[in-house]
Image (cartoon, rainbow, N blue to C red):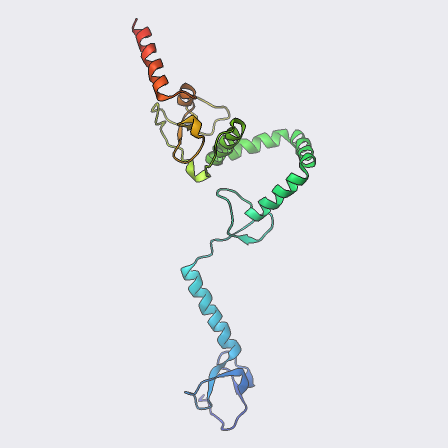
Length: 228
């Protein structure tokens, strides 16, 4: 049905929501007969907000994910970690202020759930070998007082040991000769990007803290001894 414009009318119905509203609820539009927009200000603003949201999603997709501890959607997640940085910082402060209490509680809980804890660690290590290796080498660097500036993404396990050419097989309960391990190429520099290599446990055991000159001398000596 054709809409009829009534001269001097003080109200009109919105073409979007269908509600009859005062002309003051409509934006000025000189191109229309009554000098007002066809949709009310509220509907116009809602449509504009929807258009802005669609454009923003198209240009900047939502990269946030929900933290399982606080429930908030966050963007600040340290590489490979489950909880957000805000929760981790809160827990760090609480631990610093209640260190003895937390250690006592953890010790009691661990002793009561030893079997479940071992099973969880084994299953987690099989599914997240890079994270497990990251945690191990981080603790090692702390004990040895060596620099550590790695991220989980820096640890990429190859299929073949680059030193000995044997297949690398992760996921064993105990370290095997072909288990992957992280080696600091130049031990003094520590575990930093560009100074690590993922090699077999066998190769790492042979190398340990020796330099390439020392390894070559040992190899030459052993070859001469075997040759007789």
